[in-house]
Image (cartoon, rainbow, N blue to C red; front, side, top):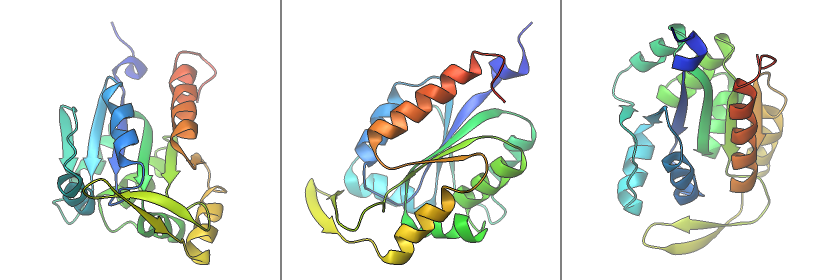
Length: 184
């Protein structure tokens, strides 16, 4: 007979950020037992960039009450990854606003004590980001965007990463922890 932990899955949420989107999709493709949650903006961005995902279970932001978050109350998830995460989503999470599927997932994961890894996109004063049609653009995050990332780093059960290497490392550590009895 399998345990609850063995049956749990990883919830991966995509926001409307194109920054490191390709790298996040590459990581997702290596995982098993992952459900994908798409904000409305993420669904648009995937089309604009021409990216596809290879995930069987996909939930989209199509209900006012974010119905799929109910899965967290069933103990279905051992962890959440929100990657890449737009500055808009970061700001809402910092302010406790849960008005869409992704911010509701973050809120409910916290209330259910499900650890969350957030890949924040706006982490430096100047960044180069991928734009649709293989274009590269310079972006200059605002002070408030940078401050919100720093604030989110102080939240319980939340690990904030700033690049794809840190994301992979945090995810590997989370998955390795699940194989031990000391992981909460």
